Image (cartoon, rainbow, N blue to C red; front, side, top):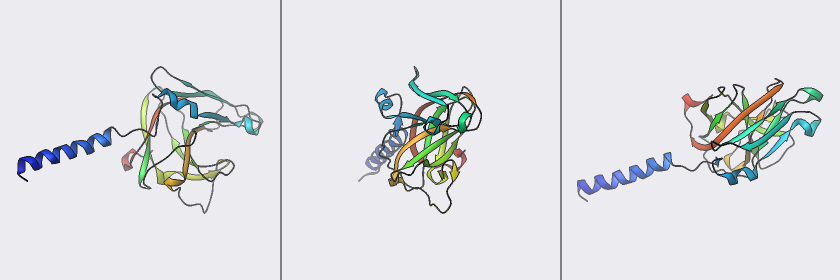
Length: 195
């Protein structure tokens, strides 16, 4: 194979790899209207609380999670959850989320296939009021929790055990909230991007 041909082949392969990295399909993409049908809200009303959390589509191709957080009746959380997802990733990879929030810190939840009441793996999802930001959370940074408390002696979540994802607000600050999510991607973890 001559040098010119080798250069052409290398350029084509490299361009394909680069395009694959940039154009990788999101795990969740709310610019696709069909995505909404699999999501639902789960609020503290299941435990007697009075928080309200809802979802709706926005004009800029995002899902808006909004409502009012209430601390009455021992409440204090509002959340949304996906339906079942097929998550393919390596343990060293990360979730990247494009969000526009209200300055509050939300929770990014991963739900395992083996269901336990009020159990999930959690990571913080900070937002900047009124601005679109992208937050990267390595899989290894998610913490096992039950009823909001860390579970000891529980190992990291294996990617093949993830059945769904979700977003929650439970910052003990009563009042209205609003979070927009445009997409969730899986990508190599980057130390400087971690929250």
